[in-house]
Amino acid sequence: METERLTLSPLTESDVDSLLALHADPEVMRYLDPAPVENHLGDGFHAAVEKATGRFAGWFEFAGTGVVELGYRLHREFWGRGYATEGATALIDRGFTVGGVRRVVATTMFVNAGSRRVMEKCGLRHVRTFHVDFPDPLPGSECGEVEYALTKEEWLRTQGERHVPGGKI
Image 1 (cartoon, rainbow, N blue to C red):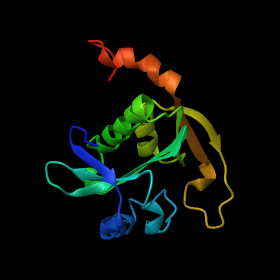
Image 2 (image 1 turned 120 degrees about the horizontal axis):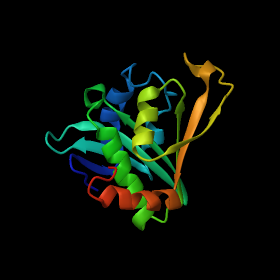
Image 3 (image 1 turned 120 degrees about the vertical axis):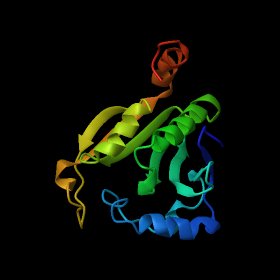
């Protein structure tokens, strides 16, 4: 799958070194549980490669059937450039148009303002804030986790706005 600036393809064993480098950055992992890299290989996980340079930018998760989980992780050099929103929006649009998706859900720590902003820019809305009792909590976990979601019906209502001159994008 291609967006304006990214190519998204399934993560494979050949991406392991790129994943390890991404997960080795403490700033990238600041709000994230360090799950083993192998957990990101397989259905629903996509390598994001910058088209202009061919460089591995990070990965996107769009996993599940009917109700899917959206996730993303990018190298710091790609932060603030709209790549997370671009890749996530493309996956959401494809999921609702041809993937049989009924609802998209994403979660992050409350304190992860950057990730929350991406979710909002993709059309997801805040559903709830909740607390999890982690055995080894990350700094900021005392503020809780947040869930954002978007249903197909909500997404359909926004499509006219996205395609009307002067409408939302």
